[in-house]
Length: 255
Image (cartoon, rainbow, N blue to C red):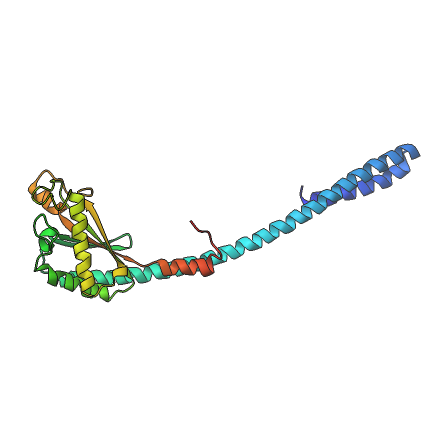
């Protein structure tokens, strides 16, 4: 019940008791007074509870406003970080594109999407057929890529190996299947990047086998497209998360 309604009802009871005193007998007056006193007491109790609830709601509203203000700060910080990361990715894309501008577009692609940079190289640029051994010519390719990566320390690099759907035949004793071959190849690339000065804590090697084709495996052309190594460059966001945990989010919750 609203506070204004409660106050009005109490005032009505006070007025009613005054009128009763002049219009009814003493016995009826006393009975009416008793009932009025009981209801007045109940109303006052409800009024006190409502005042307590109102105070609690006000406190909750103030706390909510504080949280909303913190969220604005958090969003501002996140927006700034995202803008900075996007600018750095754009710079990296431009630098890498310039460094590999002489390569056939069918063998080397680079694109930015969803806040990450995707660099794809056909495996014929990097590997011997059916093996995880890097070609001699791949050394200069990976050295060039490493130089750009080293200039952008705030980026993680996931190296993904991909194959076509043809089963491993020639080197089956060494590679159980396409998955193991793709893992071995991505690891070879990671080791080459590390050798060229890219910090190991920024690198991840993963093998996808033939699980993520980008073309149909029913033709030689399609299979060649699927045999590739991809470099997924993404910004480090752990600093922002720590900032949220220590400042914006208070104690936060852990998963």
